Image 1 (cartoon, one colour):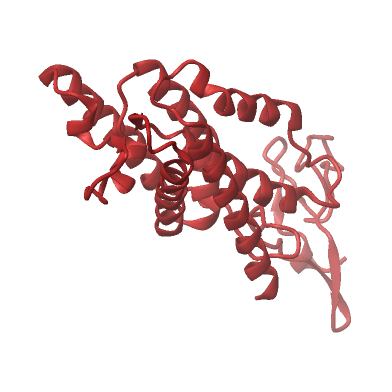
Image 2 (cartoon, one colour):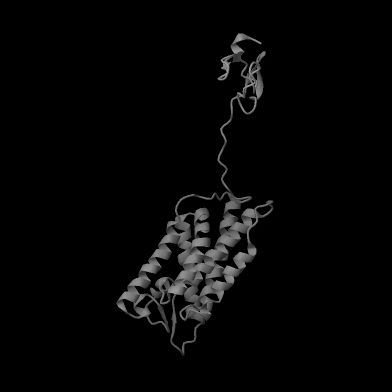
Length: 254
C-alpha cells in the first residue's frame, strides 16, 4: 500500500489508516458506515466519487406530466371567491338572482352562465363543493398548471349551466346556482389523469371506492341543495372527463 493511500486519521487513536477500510486496524474504532466503491484509473485503484441523487418527480406513464409543488391558485380562487360572494349576499340580504344566479327562463342576462356556478345560497352546498375542489381540483392543478385548470373549472361550470338551461322546462321558473358541475368536472378530470398515471404500475393504485363515494355525494347534491341542478352537475362531469382524456392524449403524443 502506498503512502498516499494512508490519508485517513483515526479520531480514536490518531493512527493513519487506509481510506478503504471501515474500522481502524489498530483500535477497532468505526471510521465509516461502509467502504467506498473502487474504480480503476490507470494502474491504481481510487475511490469512486459519489453521484448526486436526483430528485424523483412523479410522472404520468407514457406522458410528460410532472406534479408541481406550487400553490393551486386557480382552485383557491374559486373557493375563496365563492365564499366571499356568499358572505356578501348573506350580509346584504339581496336575492340570489342579484349575485349571479341563473334564473330560467333566461331573458338577456347571458353573463349568468358564467357567474351561476360561483353563486350560492346554502353554506352546506358550498362546503361540499369546496372540499371536493380541495381534494381533486388541487390534484388537477398540480398536473395541468394554474391557467389550464382555471379554464377547465370555468368550462365545467359554464357548460353545465348552459346544459341545465337547455334541459329546463320553459313553463316554470327555476334558479340554478352552485358549483356541483365544477366539482364533478374536477373529480372526473383528476380520475382520468390519475388512472393514466398508475396504469401498469405496481403499488401505485388509488382508492377507487373513495372516489366513487365522493362522486355519488356530488351527484345527489340536488336532493339537498335547492339551487343545485342534476343536468349541470352531470354535464360538468362529462366536460371534466373529456378534458382529462384530451390532456393525457396530447401529452402522450408529445
